[in-house]
Image (cartoon, rainbow, N blue to C red; front, side, top):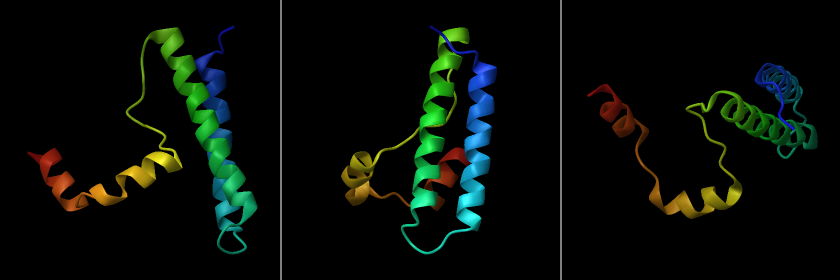
Length: 89
């Protein structure tokens, strides 16, 4: 069963709006409402990406990283200015 990419996009947009509300009302580090909104955005994005690919064989230039990937990459940090210079060339 496929999901219409437009419906998935609306869900992603709603999740982003909810994340903004949660972030603006944050009650300190580790606020559970912000964390829940964070994961809702990630989930909604994956649904949108799958729907987009299934309908149009297309993807976005975005990627969701999980905590395990972040832990693996901690020792491999790259200077953001260096990345920008590469893109500008």
